[in-house]
Image (cartoon, rainbow, N blue to C red):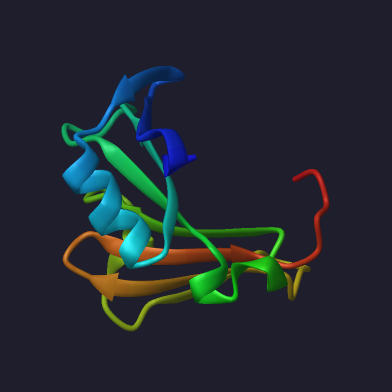
Length: 105
């Protein structure tokens, strides 16, 4: 959580400058995770806090992934057979992922 100005990068913890952590908390970001996959750019996940009514979801993440097709503006993805897992493309590499049913997959 950003209360201790932590940034998770591939399961390692890095400190954030207090000024950055304060700004992120101010807009309701509780946690940041960074992953390196097959894409030349890193995937960055921002987990919102109660300012976003995130407690209504088992998972809610604002994700930057320039290689994921779900980032296209207006794109809406629903997991086949589920009405609980959704992605909403915002354009420019950004999308919002949500899950409301707390199942393991």
